[in-house]
Image (tube, rainbow, N blue to C red; front, side, top):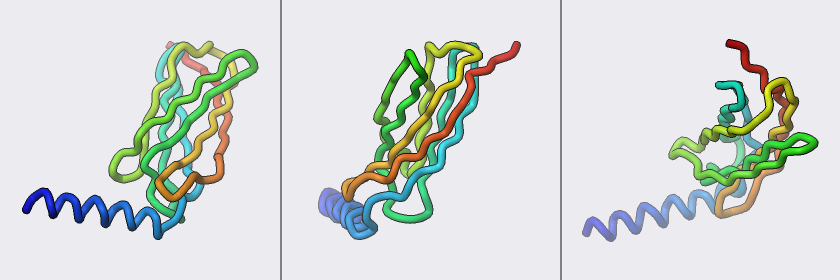
Length: 116
């Protein structure tokens, strides 16, 4: 009985995501949390379906790193990028993903500035 209820719940969530469509472009906030670290928090858009994961890329002229991370149940996600260079500008791009498709990318710019 419990397995049937669980299966019906999973089917409901899957159908909700399909009928809600692909997610809207997420909002992105980045914070320097150490001399070579940036924390990126990605939040879902109020339009479109709820994201199940995010593809987040951080780059500059000599560094590119991309990470696909699952979303929390509320649709947000957090990623920490390490190995960055202090006082260097980086570009952060994010795309929200669910089973119905992907959002348009959103891009922000951040400078890795850490003061002790």
